[in-house]
Image (cartoon, rainbow, N blue to C red):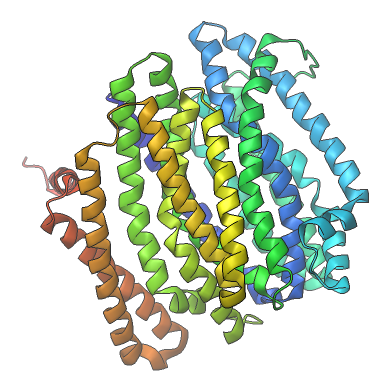
Length: 523
């Protein structure tokens, strides 16, 4: 089977499960919005949740990047049992380090809240501190779940790790609607911790099938442990810089009107829907392959694989961003405007979503481009470029927060993200010459035209549908959004064929293949 087909199949599996996870993620946000609205209570929950998440992203997010290449290096040498022994030590390190973080963080919760959201009023800050103390154990189990996921992916197991997120979302939804009603937001926080515990435990049986047996190990001098730590450090710096994006937003938003942090959070969740469903699926599926190609010095095949993934996510992400921009208000009304989530919350969230949508394609492309560097064991260049990006984000945040309030923070994030895409593309092309050829720029022009045509059509259909079914309440709103999205997809596909994009031929071949399967066989 070709490299492209292997990646496509793995990406399809992850994408389908990620779609389930993202749907459940929206139900989760709807449940939280229904129970608590866009208020100071949800501001406190978001701040408290993001404290352990930030620490996770800095350390465990970096470790997840290096698990696959290090594990596969041992497997390639015929030392799979040694690889399992190595990661016994890594897992022990994860548990010990994050247990220490948790213990210290519980006592320092008020200080952590003050550092990450200094503009909160005293009551909201006190609530955020209590919630932080409850949710800090997430660190331990989130860390374990992520390492387990990397090990399973290295063994070409994708379904169970992807499904773990859905398990977490189901538990949080149930907690919001039950514990949240009985014990308030503290009940929701406790249920959130349980969700992450189950996300780790659900992967253990599959790990055992692959040959993993955990034994407590503190062999810190193992050469593999040293290599993991050496590779992790630059990535950890890069991911910490990436988290500064979120910290900047929260610090600045904490001084704005109540609900600003929640509005940015709900809008960001919507932006993460297409990224989590499709882009991360492609990134997860193609990363083990490009790591192998880089190790084998197959530069041409490496270039073609990275460019193919870049085109694929751009073909998806650019129209998705345009669609979210045009349909921001009706989508938010449909998904969130229930219970305590009122028209004011919808307006605030829609403003943030419009400005976040501008940078969606940049966020998607950066996932692919960054992995192109990591596959070649270049973890320093993305860190340097991220440092520049963070400075740009801060500058534009300070410039735009005055006239645009929380919308300015979202726009600054998008500007910085797109700049990072340009810089990553430029320097990756230096490492893999010939990546960005004329036909790639032709593709970017074509998909931009197709997206513009789609935007015009969606705008018109949305207004037409609003006039026809606007008086039918939630059903009418669902029909309005659904018809606009379906119409937009039809226009996009028509434009892709009209512009004779390469992807049109690919779509036609797959369509013919599936139609052939659907025809009844002749007996």
